[in-house]
Length: 184
Image (cartoon, rainbow, N blue to C red; front, side, top):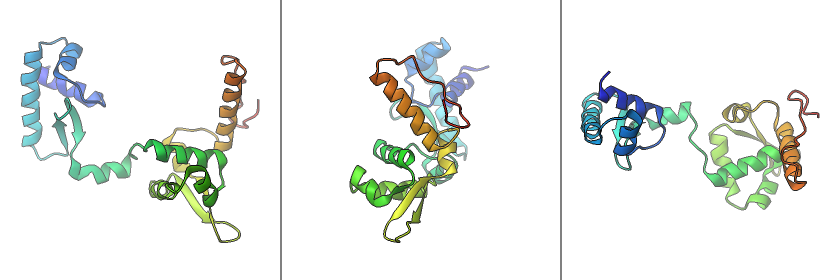
């Protein structure tokens, strides 16, 4: 097993950019040898017509080339910005929630967040009975994305119980919840 293939394995497994010294430490190898092998590996990836590349802008990382990002985004939703995640959290905990009420809670940027969440398939939107606003709900893709079991109301109850326990100073005295019913 060559140093180059071992470096490739390290870059494949780690999801963050690594410095030469980090890779050398992981592999218990000489930094200069690691740097030379990295350069060879970069040349190997750039010479073949593949979808992967090694980027060395802020350390070394194995990544999908920019021209293939549309495929990646289709298969693996990209991380949500914190502000969008907060909006999604409000929707999940208060669903179904009127879009107008969400705007009151989260501000005018909530509309943009809703559009992004709709596009990613994490929420659905339907006209309310009056036809003047929309009701927002999470979708099965939301539960799948966050690996949730049960519904959002059960999750809200669990979070409420945890919050109450912390407020009462009983962080370790959590009440067991039946996953299927949401009951204690």
